[in-house]
Image 1 (spheres, rainbow, N blue to C red):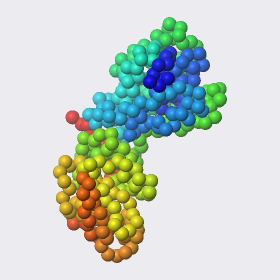
Image 2: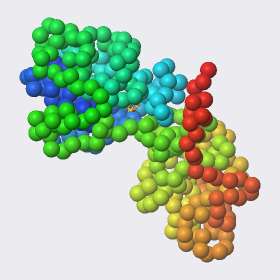
Image 3: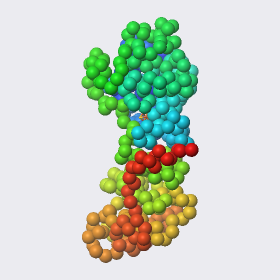
Length: 351
Ligand code: SF4
């Protein structure tokens, strides 16, 4: 048991690592209350490696929670309140995190929950009507305090009962950052993190990697982690990840599952390729040949040698060798990097 499992707190907070989440905790800590910040982690958000640094720099008490499996399940089942501009299910996401937090209240003896939301700052999850939906759905009626916008919102139980002095809470709204910066100065915060801490589901570059996964397959968290790596290629329902550098190659090698296909060049320096078998059947020979050719294509030395190159393919512990012309097209099969398609994303969960 760590000290955090036995310590008791007045409040639990959603802690993304962004400035607003830091300020919301500071605002409550300032009133002499103990707050534990929960840092949710999944393939899309979370940076648990930074926890210790944040604790030290901002004087916070934090706990990382890996919610990958449940979160991916929520996303893949079609979020009830829909998606934002890209693949971000912001309303369902907030509800999900708040429900998880609510479930931990008793364990930490906490009486209320804090979130760093600011009214009117975000188009989807932070509009006034959305805030009320989130509150109701999360089963946190009366218990969710948003210290940065609190004076625009009805008093919560902690305020009404005098545990928190409402007069010391903030009345921030809108997209400006002036008031947050002033608060940061007040709390001597000199290391200002990027707003909101970053979420890959709001990043088009990441979302275009996830889209084919959601179209072809019922993915698990490990699939999204793999989709975050290297270069991504799809050919019908066949999926390849190819390392861009040594670090990518090492990471990709760590992600290999028993049913995956690994590719590497026998005689030339080049990338590692990983073919994830999402079809459930062994890849046909011509698909393996074209995937091997694709791996060869990303080795400048193999391309320059102007003859066929040998690629080793490993599957279920067995190795075979294929001799191929390097290139992204072979045997009528063509590998392409995914592109973002807004309509396809909208159609994903259409009933
Ligand atoms: S931006 Fe990402 S982490 Fe934040 S609420 Fe939306 S989906 Fe959740």
